[in-house]
Length: 147
Image (cartoon, rainbow, N blue to C red; front, side, top):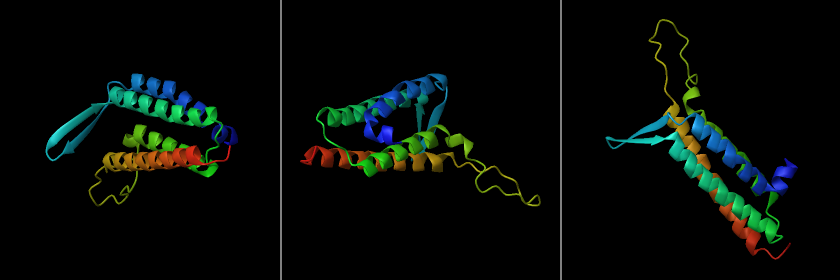
């Protein structure tokens, strides 16, 4: 973990081919959202392109700190990496969380709970929080006078 925190740009640049591969493998899958009776369907391949650009920009931010010989705040970098990875894992495994809150009582209706939308919202929330942590870390590290 120390190596990842000391050079986080390599971690985010390494995520780019992984996300590209995931987007290619699951290109037929899509996220279906209903927002005010309007269906919104986004394919995984389009979302993988968004993640590619986002991770590339984060990698460039961390590389610019490395190039300028500025130290990022280690605990913020670690938190950002952990939250970003957690959000990505939750996002791509959102359909596998239906075991939460299972009803094991055979006398009641055994309806399968669908928590995919909840996991998707949690993933997006964690993603946004980690992006804010990254921005704060980047700006504070860039402005600081220590090298």
